[in-house]
Image 1 (tube, protein in one colour):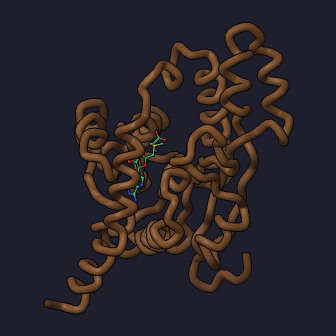
Image 2 (image 1 turned 30 degrees about the horizontal axis):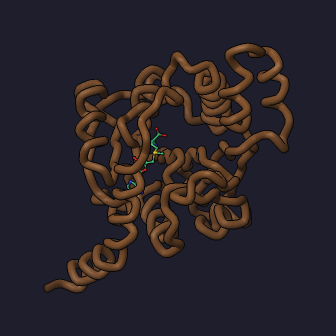
Image 3 (image 1 turned 180 degrees about the vertical axis):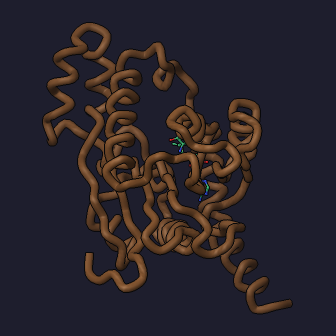
Length: 249
Ligand SMILES: C[S@@+](CC[C@H](N)C(=O)[O-])C[C@H]1O[C@@H](n2cnc3c(N)ncnc32)[C@H](O)[C@@H]1O
């Protein structure tokens, strides 16, 4: 057996318990209407997220997206991948991986032809080094409780990203006291996960319980509350891999 094959086998064994835990956590999840476009709280969050994502992608000089090779790790059913197509990305340059086969199957049904989807642990991406311009992770790291797996996924993301390329990050920075299957990722940990990269994040997303309660009745109030930093539960922003010759953060 080659040294590389042995390393891949060791990595797979090291993470199998956490993979099982993640699969069990998603199997337990109650599917309700909270992520529906017809839920006003979710609509509020999606509008703000889309505006913020478009703003940071444009500010980073990544538009137009048509020529960009883009990978989403933990793509779920492919909602962001379809957003990228709507924003001008070429489906043939879009890739998604997810741990859960049923989600990957659903993404295959929902995404346009040309999008490449794979069921695998993002700790072992089957792509060449430096082969993507842009990566995305959205609420994947909060689903991973094991620190070693978080580090392995982050390292793989950096490996497949070209120098100067960016990771679009959207995730909780706070814990959900009612959901022990997730853990927020604070700014300090994000910097540790991506050593040597520059990290630019800003808090977004009105706390979902508040948004669900208020948005159906008081949309404008929610838009005001969205601006209060202490009521925001997520970070959205970019993590840039240094280009050759670049120094510092
Ligand atoms: C909350 S969902 C978010 C899905 C999608 N990113 C979105 O924002 O719509 C988190 C996803 O991450 C996936 N995931 C968690 N750990 C993973 C890992 N190590 N490798 C690949 N996918 C993973 C889960 O299977 C799940 O589909």
